[in-house]
Amino acid sequence: MCGADDFREESKRVPEGAPQSSGLKVAAGILGVSTVGLLVSTIVLAVQKNTATSAGAASKDCTAEITKADFGENKCSGMRPDWPNSECIVEGMGEQSGANVTKGYNGKKATDVVPITSPYREKGLCPVNVHWHLGTEHYSKGQYDEEGSGPIEFHEGRIGFQCRYYDKEDPRFSTPYDWQWCIGMTVGQTYEVHWPHSAAGECNSPWQYQTPFYDGVFCNLPADAIKGLTRQDVASNVGVQSQSFTVVNDEDYYYPDLFTGMIVDEAQGKGTDMAIYTGSTTGTSRSNEICSPFNPITWQVDRTCHLISASSFDKMCQQMESQADNMKDDLYAHGSRPLVTDELAADNHVQRKRKGRTLL
Image: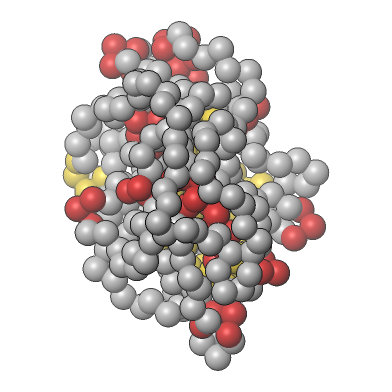
């Protein structure tokens, strides 16, 4: 891992998003989960926590590797259904993501599905993965849009929209960071982070976090149980948190835990101005012609872009490396799907400003 500095080939990139259902709790018969206990500390780390510095916070001895306990068989492995992408014009194709989340926006695709508007944990969902995209897949006018910029203007894996913070003359955006855990990351660049959640995940176990995330989403949902699920079941039991950041080499923007979910801080305006709607999984295998069959799932998207220290990201990657499942294919930025058209975006966008309550 040490010194890795370029993106892995696009063929290895995992598409984005994933579905389940309220019927998941009944149909799968597996949800005795009442609270979402996160198990960042259940895996044994052979690496000590380091003091963050602007030169490189999550320092690592490159001759050492993380030692993991033996947790036996990964019951989630291979649980992703074999559902191929389809042309968007196919009858019955559901709503898609990422959409415009500008305040006041609503899509044109009619849907009778209602998204989860309360914190996912209150509905028995737990995070089953974390990954991020190069640029943003969503669009928020004035925050991450066509006026944004960054040090990377083009990439073969497709770059999305960027935030408006970047200033190449400001050392916060131009001073290199000594990445120890994340792969191919760039200071000054915008990334959209996704935390897929599922009520059918292997919550509160060493196998809670999975790569690809679909394995985590469908972990406790056998194929025969999926057949009885309604569209509302899916949207009520599978959701994604989304938050966009510009990475800076400045420890004033350090946050200790990006791994377990989006940052919610009312005083700093993080995770409070939310767009909530139903859509689909994303990724570069989908477009406005080819759509994802994994829909409808709830999206809770922070409309505001935020600054985050490179060390915060690197610590998240270190936590990913410590999980029971191998998350190496999510340690780098995935390409971004083009913004979906109004005709593919759901007409159920909820305008929500949360105060005094988190969405974690």
